[in-house]
Image (cartoon, rainbow, N blue to C red; front, top):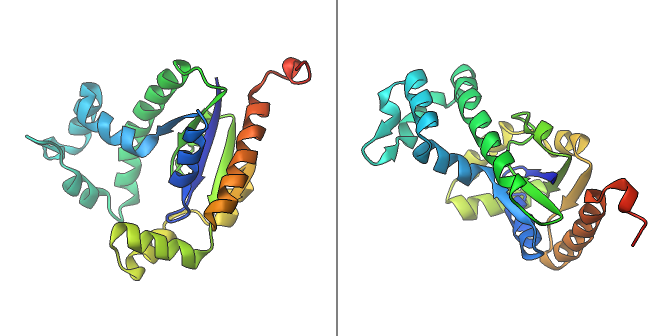
Length: 203
């Protein structure tokens, strides 16, 4: 199965691109949502987190996200310890999921695809970009956060320039009508890329 990594900074509209690809019959794996599900539902992952961080990781209701977030907030060493446990579990789940799909290609959607080194699990990377001011407006509206909070989160992410340097394809998300056209072109390109080389010119 041909695997496409889709990434973009906060407010870039990465999820909208994923939605448009899904509308075209592409299977999309939302790594953030799936990670949350696995941290609650995968017993081996649960026990690994408890062993590493303590029983406070969980309450009777499930993962103690506020406690864990506070534990790793602005603590790079703790964050790396968390990622070293969670990311392999998520990627194992992704590989199993991808092998069961029947479309031309699948998409791994992840905001931290490149920061976390997850690009090694995909064949190609697509970066979604948008002007900084538009990204700020989108993120503030979506999250109900202040400008300063969003800017702080942006500073902790890879820049668009760094992201596009590592991506094969880049797509700009400003106007929805233009985005629809760009996603259609991208989809056709990825369908082409996904075909075995010997079969590309036989149709």
